[in-house]
Length: 455
Image 1 (cartoon, helix red, strand yellow):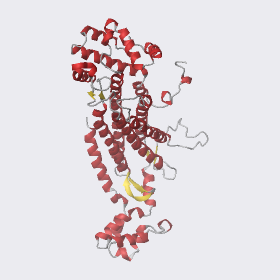
Image 2: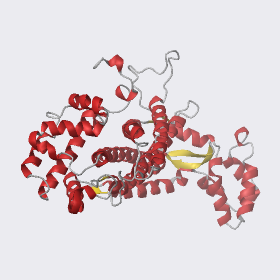
Image 3: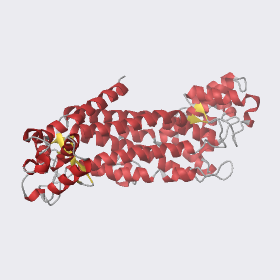
Image 4: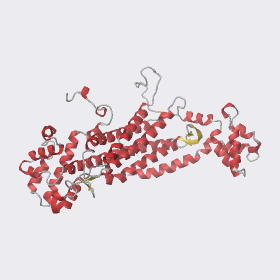
């Protein structure tokens, strides 16, 4: 039953995606874009003297959902079994006598692919805003925690100290690279066609070049320089692969939050509404990173959607319909879900609960082992061959958790004290001095990205 929420089928209709973004792909929005293209075609042809001006104006006035309704289009499609022809027939009816010029010289893909370009251009604007917001939230955390020591981990094990701010700055830089990719991609994405059945423009006669250029100018697009009956599908494939890259970055950041929220690490936590939110239906104590897990889940789906568009690049001769059905699903779902996971991740980062004391405890728990690199470099600078210094420290850090700290062991080692004083050992094994480089690099990254983000 229409309007019955229990009858909704796709989770995007009731669970995922923001309403303004879902609305971009509503049937009404898509019909409106197709009508815009038909109106632009008629007006351009009138400008070139190909059709009467008054008839073009009648078509332009009729090209709205007040005059061309979804109900009438659906009714026509049921009998015609052709979606674009149903729109053309309905618009022709609404335009009266001038309707005989609707779709003059065009083919279906001229309308659908140009409308798709409008859709992708609008979507790119939204996604660029999402990336900008996420980058700004990450940079806010980078500034806030630029000096907060945190253990760096490689292979899941303690490495050397970094700062939490540096970790956030690294993520922000990755997000900004995606924004730059989108800016570079947009000119290849906002591309339509008005060149007829196999792309040569023969149906428009001697005005073919001017018709296509004029329609695209009216719509704020550029023309595919070498179409077949359709716009080259490498463009859509590039876009969905771009979304897959964005999704992978989002999952990487979300996975870091999930790992750092582990009970045994507990250095950060997602925002949690203590007054109302429930973590588990049975384990009342739970505070799960559910939003980050949701981001991870949706990211995997966005990546999966990148495959069909690559297969759609393979067409029979000048075109077939093998791309059509899956694009109706893949394109809107990819965009709605990418927007959804980016905005959710931004909310997580913005409200992230950071336990600086716990981070400090974890650095200290290494017993100084996290600072072996610094001590090794100091010994090398004092004249000890690097490989010898490395071996001394490798042996010295065996079973470190069971015995004295590295500071104590180093001060008791003649191989070290013959090169360094106790005060120097303390200084080289002090995490606060070691992470100064991370703080300074964070500042450089933040400053550079602030320039990119400036209005």
